[in-house]
Length: 478
Image 1 (cartoon, rainbow, N blue to C red):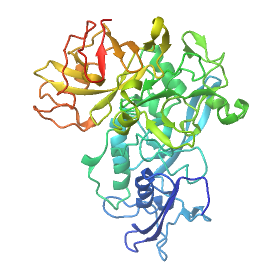
Image 2: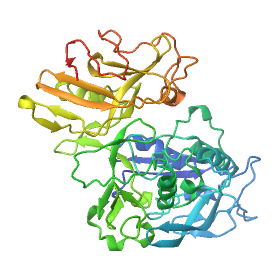
Image 3: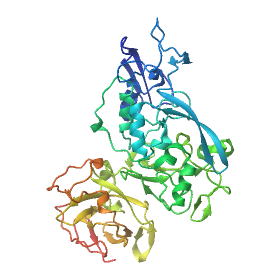
Image 4: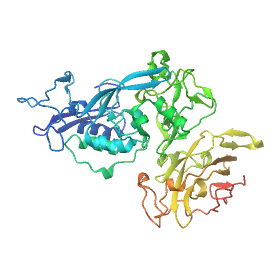
């Protein structure tokens, strides 16, 4: 089988009594990630199986033909063997969709099964939610077979590959609503994309959502409006779950596509738009890179590759391989990668100072990965940077930045930059000296960091600070 797909799967047979699929076929072309994704298609996340779903008592949700036992509503696509399913499973609605060019009617296919709907109302913080949207872009096989990427981003069952995929409670609830499985919800992974973002986010356009957020001076995550083509260097930002960083994928005429071919409902910028960047009009021919996200711009992860396209490193903070690729002499942001690392916004003026006080912009500005630890005895949240540098972040929001000036001896460059401490309670349970389960850290009074055996001086982050020379780095007074 030859195609441009990264993988494909299919169920070969179904049990006679319950319709549960068994005997599977999986083809893996490139990435092992797709094993999980394709297996979930086989288990039930497939239009070929929707008409066979059953309720909690084992009764078919779609009416059956008395003699054959097949779904009785006819074919949705006979060539592909897809029966029409009941509206108790997926319901089609039309919604108002606002863009910079007006209001349009947009079709949406909503999963309305009970467990999915109950969880989704809590997840999005939208009590009036009618259902969870399925993908509507692309051909059958992409559309109707995945969660809508605009609202669920890096969930495992959206249609776009990402290094930071998460198997969420919503997908487990979908499997339970097939009537064939009892999932263990404790094994679900934390998904940040869209979490608690409300009804406008989960039911309307990203344009409507961004306008609403901006009107309340709130952040527009997971979306963004920082054009990739601006000549400000490589400006990066943390992804919503703070497990990685990326760039705003707002570009002009992506993939050589003529902007006039994109439907007006997906035009979010231009003279008629109420959204501005730094007070300036964003050109009308700017779109998010991905049609699966309805051309909404968002922070997209990065993978660096060599000349042959082989991956060198990622922007994942928990990717230990990054530590092998980034040497001491090239670790300009003093990053630390590992299972206890998070993405932290850093100043965009992160600077390298060379001989004769020559200034260079750091290759990556705006975000970096640092290791964190929670310690009651040491005062709360501790950020650990490369070379043994440790910063205490106390309770509350600290408005004064942490200023850093560090000498990388091998290339003879001074790294100068700053960042703001995150709120301690965003990551630490101050009562139990623990880290939240969404990062998968153990609750332990004796939790030790790999950096603890490195000598250091420890200062309040409201001041610039000095760190003694170690085997790799030394800090200068800023």
